[in-house]
Image (cartoon, rainbow, N blue to C red; front, side, top):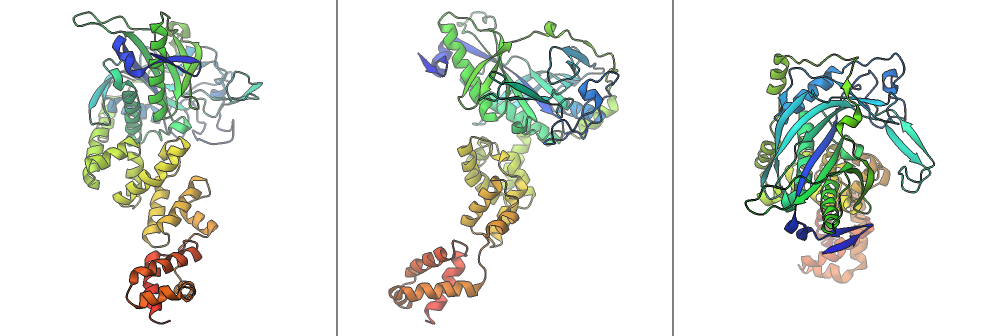
Length: 509
């Protein structure tokens, strides 16, 4: 049964698997957090004014020659080792040629047939604890392209734009591209596996300290390859692989999951009607949850790869590889089990953290001084609520350090939970740190008993019947007075302290 969705028809997701088997593949690009670029001394910084972090090499100016960033090579080897890969005794850079409006020299320095790392695998844990092994074909070094901003159109895309601006700040930023082998047997869990795999890569590179891996900034980008092949009957040889599409630069874990699901349903609907799948790149549209055609997908021959003549092969010593191997952190699976034990969370409590993709943020919040229980409360509570409302990842809204600051203000009595939620809203809105928002908005708890007593006396005098009940020992009647005082103080009072003072003042009035 097919249903309309946007401009394409989709087959019911469960129905797909009666006839077809999905085959997945992923290309994840990781921007490395080096101080300078891959082949020049230009700064590698996010958020600078356009075209300020540039050098002659980044612009492809005549006579400029590249030099390899040693730190980027070390980071790339560490990542290869963490992916269980073999490290090449000698690897070579190559020129990848096609029209790049955002690379001045019109080719990308990458690696082709001699990557730095190859033949690995990653253990990926799904939401129910199931483990899936994803085979890694290669991890190779390359440089990033610049950024195009299309002006004058309504969508921000090149279609309908009047002109485009080029920012070369990102051109030449060090990248590692991780390419999987085909992933078979995913079946209905294909979208979940896609999300979990990218999350695992994110966790690995963060634990290595080689990338911030912030998908909303493009530090980590995923190209998701999806194809379908007819389901084989028992005893039959598997059918040949179907034609794949490559959905480019998906920039959130949730979107990776949605994009894979959409492509499975879209391709199945086409095949069921006797159509054919075009091998092409596709663009993911977050607003509509759909993909659209990009350009026909090129094969390696179309890029006219040839060895980069201006760079020598990279030949890491055995001593360097052993040094980097010895420095590897624990794997994401071991890391998760250790944190759960350290924090004392039940399986279900910890699963909520994993499902919300806030484990790294949780750890950093606790490291900054918050208790695990409070960190979990705020990340899974108010922060996740705001993130869901805005359709973004929780970690993009606020830093772990700011969350720990907020928790400290609550625990010291300077903020109530109600006030803290208002402070959080200010932090998310970009008004500054929690301390700065408290001062700017005047949200601190009133700790001056004089002001509280004045408000309490006013409330008691205006409610003589309540005062009489409290004097007769009916202390639950104090709730009405406490509510009136909290309203008068605009919520900026400690309710427990107000209660103490209400009972104290009742005997004196």
